[in-house]
Length: 414
Image 1 (cartoon, rainbow, N blue to C red):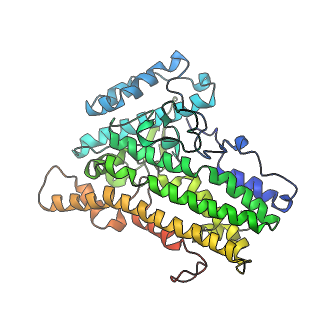
Image 2: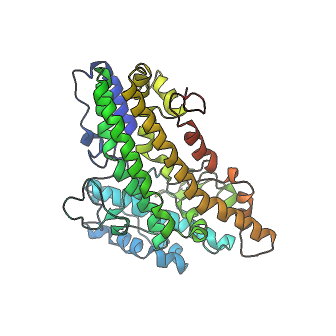
Image 3: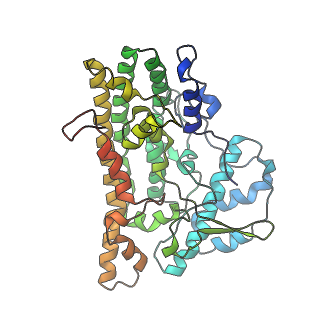
């Protein structure tokens, strides 16, 4: 069952651009109407539901609570096959729709990839996907324990977050979900701030935009401090053999899914789905930043696209480069975004690229327990796929290399 209750940043931009000529008369649209929090942006402002209200869905609660044990005991398949066909009409609130979305996604991926782990003979080869694109569903639906008053702005510490679902029940898996949550929570206020800056650009308010850009640069610094927290919790070798849980059915021919994931419908007909898995690269927050700041080629092309016609702060700054404070504020944003992306690549290198190359070496040395498919993927780091199905290193490197100011010694950003 696809979850579509939350509206995307693209819809928000479509609303903004349709009224861009009148922004001096209109306020920025109410973010709440797009399911976007003023303080946490694309993260929910409300904690997720820890259980379904209606006992009709009690079996879902039961299985998701036992998922790590079901996977490790190789009983996930029989338990899922015993599940009755349930009607979704009793999911009466948005929180319960979100919970159903996540619970069914985890059960689907656990079922599919735990079974393939046995086929391939891997130590821990499992993956995670569903018939709908996961976007940021996994991290977004992670809940924190009760927060003391005053924690709203700064969210909370890593060890105070808990997952609503897990494949392994390990601290490392939790960290893989929770660190992106901390990053998005830290950057959440930027959506409201930068939308106000877009409105200010229509009024020529360079002072407001300069302040907004300076505050954004400071926020990027704080966001960057969360990423290294993954190092102490995420054991790279183990993660490499667990992260396939996070993949969907797209591009999985070598893993035994030539048609992706095939779902048997209530009428017994089969439906093949080749959707990508959950990926931090699908973060709506970073896509929003990319477009509003036009910080990469993708963002700059979108800003010029007749179909999108996005108002770009970059264009505003470029027209006023004689305003040194304004230009410096924009450059500061770019200077803080680039090292953040360097840190992201470092984590990926540690947790995926290096273990993949070790897997290749082990296979060459005759270690039978290593998957041949691991070795195939490891031959070139450039060929490794992320959970979203993209070529991993080029996917991360391109926006990093393109995150430039108007001229920082590496050429122009145009």
